[in-house]
Image (cartoon, rainbow, N blue to C red):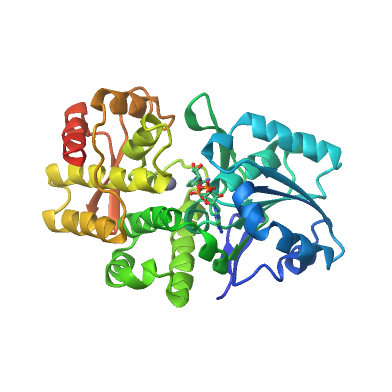
Length: 359
Ligand SMILES: NC(=O)c1ccc[n+]([C@@H]2O[C@H](COP(=O)([O-])OP(=O)(O)OC[C@H]3O[C@@H](n4cnc5c(N)ncnc54)[C@H](O)[C@@H]3O)[C@@H](O)[C@H]2O)c1
Ligand SMILES: [Zn+2]
């Protein structure tokens, strides 16, 4: 697979697609980053890939330090960041060193935020290992942590120097996590690419069985869609907001469920709810609505959630940092492949949608 170049002027970088970690040290050395690296990973990813990567680096005369934290969203906080700063100081990292994020979106967001703030920013490499991280979070430069129950409240825009994807490492990813990552894949189809959405509909089985050729196409295509959006609007002043499709209600559900559901699972319920609103408002045809629900369902993602407190969900939605002055901004699909941003969604619309997804 050919590399993908992301154009952010002087901060441009490549995404490379591989089927092992073998040439990672070589690529990093070729980029003339220093030979001192701090790798940040979580307990699960370390178990599978920690040793292997260390070996590859030791063959290449690089100094590699490692910091491992407990896997899971609960670690995505300032306490972990503070521990990383301690490591940076202990190992005397400076702007000629680099931080490597080896793991899913949690690792990428944490490591990226630490890299963006330590000494006002040191180079940072994304090595995404979950599907969600490969198709979404490692592309675009958003980094950050949760704070006092608010998701991603503290953060920055900070582009990596390189994104290195080993597609084979998805094989050790738990099935539930893999499927959750597919929610963002479906999202990219709905917001941007009708043809890609049809491709997904026609290849559900091979996607679920992780057919390697299909996977290669899938990951690259997703990176291209996301790159296309974020290159046009790096700091989310406009277009980039379409990536929040499904996330307004999705994030609210994620926090009231206290993160017992995976991000992708909540996003898929959120996409169904937003599409329902669009359909009720006659912005989206019944036919496209049922195709959306149909694909989400066939992939094995939830379309419904029982026993939710509507007022609580609504309250969470208003807390979302993306909402200004209590006017809810919503991304609604008008057809598969195209969404709009609108403020016409009322509390009643939302409650109707919540009724639908909890029925
Ligand atoms: N920065 C962004 O633009 C952006 C976009 C979307 C989501 N996110 C963030 O990403 C996070 C979710 O990412 P995620 O779903 O990758 O979560 P995650 O990082 O917690 O990874 C999911 C689980 O899979 C494990 N894992 C990862 N790779 C593995 C592998 N190859 N083999 C075995 N196990 C593996 C992890 O240890 C973890 O238990 C959330 O915090 C979300 O806010 C950020
Ligand atoms: Zn998401």
